[in-house]
Amino acid sequence: MSNPSRAAEIAARDSYGRLLAFLSSRTHDIAMAEDALADAFAKALSHWPEHGIPQNPDAWLLTAARNKLTDNQRHQTRFPTQSEIPEGSSEHDADTTIPDERLSLLMVCAHPSIAPDIHVPLMLQTVLGMEAKTIAHLFLVSPAALAKRLVRAKTKIRDAGIPFKIPDDDSLPDRSMAIFEAIYALHAHDWLDPKDAMGEEALYLADLLCRLMPGNAEALGLAALIALSQSRANARIIDNQLIPTHEQDPSRWNNQLIQYGSRQLRRAYQLGSIGRFQIEAAIEAAHIARKDTGKTDWAALNKLYFALQKIAPSAGALVAQAAITGRLHGPKQGLDALEQVEQQVGSAFQPLWASRAEMHAQLNENEAASRCYRKALSLTTDGPTIKLLNKKLLALEANSIAK
Image (cartoon, rainbow, N blue to C red; front, side, top):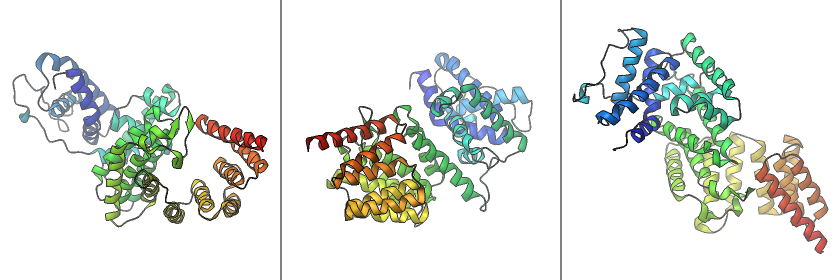
């Protein structure tokens, strides 16, 4: 690669988290390691154009960061003094083997003493190297407020002496699930606003987990779920209107992401430990199968939602299964199912009313359908969903007038 700026950019994306994890695990101070690494990247941008891009950029950056830490700390026992790689010397003289300790860094970010709502921003900054102002934009918060919270979290990690290591077997499942939930939350933010590319970052982190935890079925399931969902991003919203999955144009789906997600899902199943994310990924896969079969297998989806309710019941899954009941057994039975769902989740859940409206419309009960669409609209603030519901309501009213 001949472009020094591009080489530094690629190193930042591919190696930043690995280098920061390595340095942080030795200083136990994320902020100090970040400063040293930032200084190393700045040196690279001034040194590489003149002297050429090193054969091993990671080793060069690590050496420069270690030098900065040594200058700051004067801690020879922790970081022996090393001079920058001299021009013309062999980089193999430097420490070229950098252990990948990003999983430990993720575990630190998800520590129970850190507020859950700062887990994802902390992961994005430390593992991906994203700036606080960029993260603040993604989460619709003030950059200054987020920066302060990130600093407080890093200070707490340092002062509390939170260890940079994989936790023991007793606490590993809880900490791992906190990471999974944080990445899933990042993915969910992107669902109706893919232009912010949060789903891309969620998939990057999920794929990283698959490489760091290859024997964890739920890590694989999470990556499969995000990839399969992301594969439909270009078909999900057209002209700022939400398009239901079963109405989307499969030709707009991303085959590369479908192949990746399907591969990760198969690997997860082979491990024989079924969990929530695997089932949700299987639901996505069942919808995506329409690309090959030309139809949606509602019976398969019904079984999958039944399994999901056993493991991770939710209002959304309950409404989805009631809607599938309507497709399999008719709108009257679907409405009966939705009555039962309302007793469980209450009357303030928008998808419940949208599903009700569709079933009433199928029964030609246009007045009831209209009331339900209006109720759904009153519970919605999302633009693409509002446009979809309004379109359905207008079509319903036009049909009533025509009759």
